[in-house]
Image 1: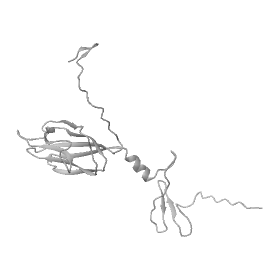
Image 2: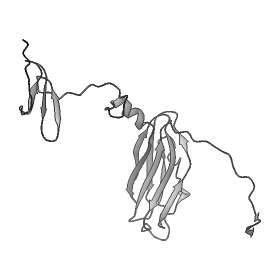
Image 3: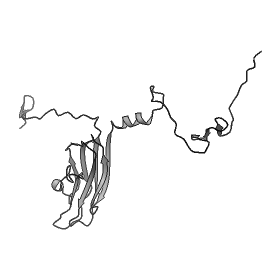
Image 4: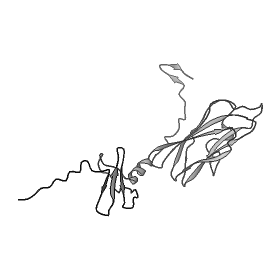
Length: 201
């Protein structure tokens, strides 16, 4: 007659050793850790997920992240100078750049203060010195798009003239090379009349 033994693991200690000298699993109320016999926390190796209920690998997560539109935001002051703010990978496309000046910068009657946004190759590629007036509050927006054939470094430059106070926020929207932008051409002729509305010139 065969004997069936039941090994019920309910109520075991917080650590469970896998073999006499192997790795072990340790857990508490909020986490479970997998360790070697030398008490080193180990990464868990899994296959790529094929079902919605399975865990994904880093490679799958990275591939998904490459499709995302990213948003870089930088706060700066009137005397911030020039600094690198982000590194973009080859194939990345800058979709838009916005500079928000919440309140007018404090300056004399003549000011030489301005903000430029670009990269290390062209410091004013997206926002040029004359594109905004920091002595007036407002949002200044550039929709100039640029795709990087090789990796690049985004740069923000503040030139301090007569201003003694002032802040701004630069927002840059970029996408990976998986985002396709289609040019559908231009509207060459403006409509100046409408049968329902009459002359709308």
